[in-house]
Amino acid sequence: QHTTPLTGKKVVVTAGGTRERIDPVRFITNDSSGKMGYAIAEEMQDKGADVTLISAPTKLEAPTGVNLVPVLTTEDLAEAVTKFFKQADILVMAAAVADFKPLNSADQKIKKSADNDQMTLQLTKTVDILKQVAKIKQPNQITVGFAAETQNLLDNAQQKLVGKQLDLLIANDVSKPGVGFNGDTNQVTILQPGQAPIKTKLADKHIIAKQVVDQISQLVQKEG
Ligand code: PMT
Image 1: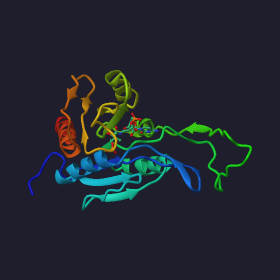
Image 2: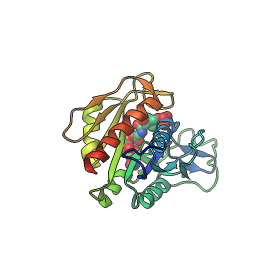
Image 3: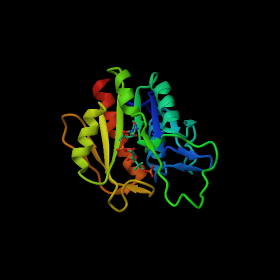
Image 4: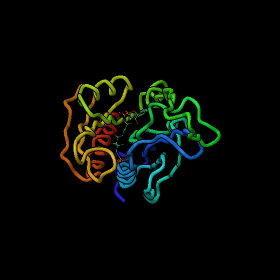
């Protein structure tokens, strides 16, 4: 097999939507299917990388040869990412991470009764995994984030690129048909510090994954 800039690189990819428990039978999650992250893991693997896929629940099968690490909550994901990132060359955070979780998770199923026509669920902020990672990031490590936005795509994405100290940010406007959560296609704008944004066409997530991995590969070559 011929070598690529990613051959032997230790890559951590996250995928899927985290789950935050309300009670034993209910949780908060989002529309992430894991398809985008799994396609990136597969493409990385094809390019010869040594891939760890940290996955929140999905219906997908992990690509063969990839080291699958299943997680449920944002806290689990944060713990696994921190652990595997220490030995990694590249981190790609495609997972859709809950920003808030229930302040208290009930031990027993919450019951409805005659006197609770309304109820309030108190939420508390979760940890920002990429911000945590930024604190331990070494100069030779590459971090790639995603931004799922429904408005002001470029401004919001640019803020995430800087705020999370990323080398690349993949922005998707998930308000557009065929873009972002759940479907087989995506359309992204790739941002890099000091570079003009690169806008892809709407295409199958495997094609988008190739374009993203290609950009990461170019970064590895530059920094190599
Ligand atoms: O899984 P699919 O159905 O294929 O859908 C793909 C996708 C829409 C999930 C994917 O393309 C995507 O946009 N993933 C990121 C979703 C998200 O959480 O975006 P965000 O803008 O809220 O977060 C920005 C970045 O910070 C992301 O890389 C996220 O992983 C990370 N994050 C977010 C919250 C948090 N507490 N910690 C984080 O590290």
